[in-house]
Length: 461
Ligand code: NAP
Image (cartoon, rainbow, N blue to C red; front, side, top):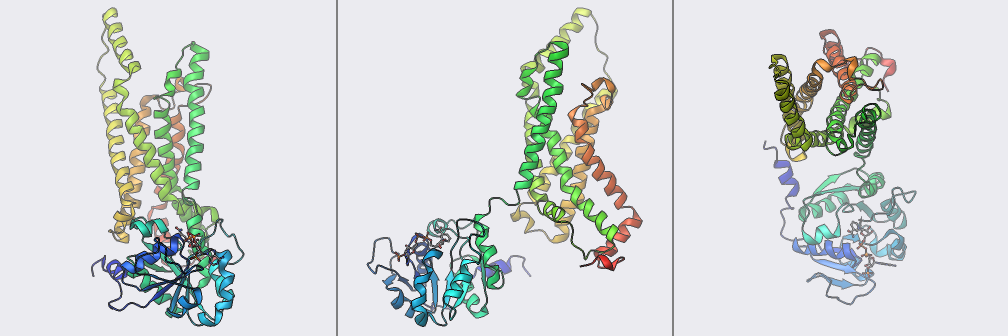
């Protein structure tokens, strides 16, 4: 079957020419925008309002009546008003009996009320069938037709038939309904639009923390130390040299941190001998934000590439090269060509180029438009196998960069090694542990555990 056929079906309106009238309570921004969209989709619309006067803002073709009159004309009523005004519905209970009420409301704060707005509505008018929907779509997006960013509409409710009727409307306006279950899910759905990049917080704070740490580390080693001991002012390193030290270091550590939780999870499963026990919360949260960690790592890698590309045009570099040539000429001495350095320099660059290429490939495959078009096995192959290969290449790039200076005592300043040496700690740990985990004995154990075999059933929950 065509992979996209389910989406096409999800977007296809119900094959019927006659649309049922939909009532909207409230002629505010959202009520009008949704009314406009529904009229375009062929639904007769009647607004229930405190003022029955037709204003120029009301979508053409819609009627505006009192709440009681409007409610009598439709089986579905969309409540497009704030929760604090819901109590005016109680006196209308008899007219609303058995009707489907669609709660579209949002709050100003996460978990603002003890119960969700939809639950509150259901308690106020218990003889109705309440469905939560549309709250994640903005009035502006409905009005302007720019619904590409979020076509998904989360729908929940206790009455299956009512939910189905609302989902048909969602499809008819070109959106995709996602059934989230019973009305108990409403609180979570109401919290969605209030969350600020929930998956990005930890990766962003972590990368800022690492950047700050390595900034001060490099400042001490590369600017303050030469100033104190050699009386040399290298403060201009702050513009390019130090950022170009921080970016690859942070990129490599973050990339390793994408794979570290997987390795830890495998160790926990091996130790517990079962997959039926929950991971600690911190590990669960860490695993959920691996994609964001990887994308931030990629951003740092991009910056490293840009900073590296400008190296030949830097005044300091040009001056140092010219100075080297003049010194050789004055001393009538040429530096012999070193094949070892040739190899080190070329392999360091080649490993960096290949590592960066695979890193970009990983980033591209994590985009929803691409990942939706590969199957689970293909996705895992790219993210896991190619991911580890990227980590190996980037770690090797850093190791070879050190070349014969690597761990040399003369490169320490105030007992501090070069920043790139610190950046190798986490990737090397991840790679060594992964290497141990793929040994045939442990790999077999892990595969059996992941297929449901239990060595220690006492750990399963
Ligand atoms: P709005 O522009 O302030 O409109 C609210 C409407 O509620 C008013 O136009 C009014 O309609 C009615 N109303 C106000 N006080 C009332 C009262 N005391 N009794 C009865 N009706 C009253 O708000 P909105 O932006 O359209 O938002 C409406 C609902 O949609 C809210 O719950 C909001 O959280 C939700 N929502 C909005 C958006 C958005 O982008 N705006 C997106 C998703 C969800 P009448 O004058 O016709 O009576």
